[in-house]
Length: 312
Ligand code: NCD
Image (cartoon, protein in one colour):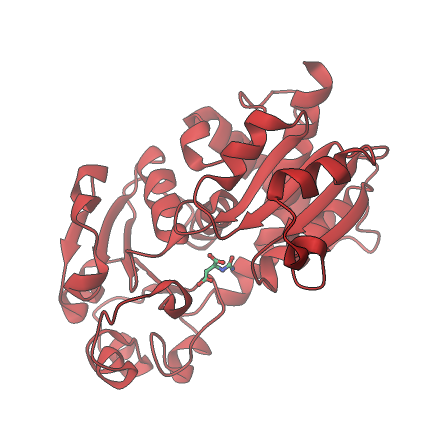
């Protein structure tokens, strides 16, 4: 493993990472992916490091992926999910975390519905904080694993045309992907109904395309994002059926393109809404590769953050 160091103490967002940091994480992820192909998938890198996974929002993939990554690195792991905890008795985030820290935890992986929750904690407690998704803001490890998966599929990220399709307004995956792909020199366009494209988006250096067919014709990679109904207080489109008619991706559309594009989705998929089953399960899809790569990338993140912690 390289002795190059990451420049940040916490991973709150892709904004914290330099281009060199991202390249280091992708390279280390590749090495950990090799480790994960071996019969013995465990390395001793994080022995004596204690990690708490604090999930205040629902999660399947991200939570299991972090836990597996931690266990493959031989860390001691404790898990917390808001349902079934004292949060329902009115305890604050800071109180919950300070109690957990009293049990001598080094790294906290936090998922929370509030934008800025990870940043807030990083200013209040001595542990290293990894943001596993803060509301509609950032989801940095998802963007890293997406970049890793694009590089693996196409051999490069520079100048690759990436389409982010769907609920851009509420998606932390969209923001982290835009920031990460821009840093790595990809070309990014977003597509979705006008109500789900935020007004500021062009200031991030991306273009908007409202027509699904046009963006599919343009892109090398289509990353289809879930409609985040749990974050919607207003009605942003008439019905799921109408959304699917205009923005749902199906295999037939992919078959008709002049080149073979790569299809991605961070999961969980709303089959038949943003993505049809025939497309999700087709030869275009690298969705399960994304899940596989998530473990390796999270191992890389934890490995380098633990290294930064020990050297500071
Ligand atoms: C994403 C998330 O939680 O932001 N899922 C994930 O982490 N794999 C995307 C989503 O929920 O739609």
